[in-house]
Image (tube, rainbow, N blue to C red; front, side):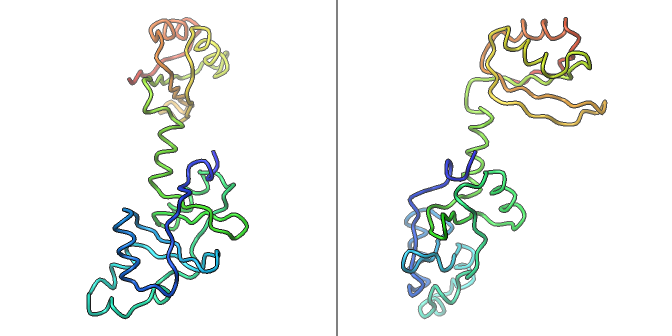
Amino acid sequence: MKVKHCMTKDVITIGKSALLQEAGILMKQHSIRHLPVVEEEQMVGFITESDIRHYAFPSLEKNIYVHEVMVRNPITINVNASIETAARLIHQYKIGGLPVLDKKKLVGIITALDLLTALINLMGLLKASSRLDVLASKEGGVEEVTKIIKEHGCEIISVATEQHSSRKKLYCFRLEECDLDAVIDGLTEAGHKVVSVVD
């Protein structure tokens, strides 16, 4: 999935000559923590809630302008980048969000919450579903596991893998509601091991 499919498109921005107080008010009004600084349709900086907190004393805040506090070269991401790339950047730099650019023009913002929402949707966690953890046999492999699941009329929402203690790969299938007992019987008969079932 690309960043453009899960970013926030209606971005609240501020000018670099605005006062820090104005930035704080905008963030509170719109319940946001990140504010791109824009001049003539070009992003020139980025300011966050934590940046403002450093100057949260009324005596200081009056005379401070956004351009004095903003990050001038923030970490950004391209609109066509993958959400995996966005997640890596947010994790690597320990930041809460990324401005999204298309040919240097600001077109959106993607936050850690946006990424979590995308992940939940990708994994089908909000749908009525179950997770089936399977150790595939050497003979049939994961292809046969998939075939048996589909033969029993089950729709696969997502598949993840993790290393099992037996040094084999554990395949975690997220399935839409179906007759799991029949699937488990079919897999067992074919020599595959169902490790766990999670609703």
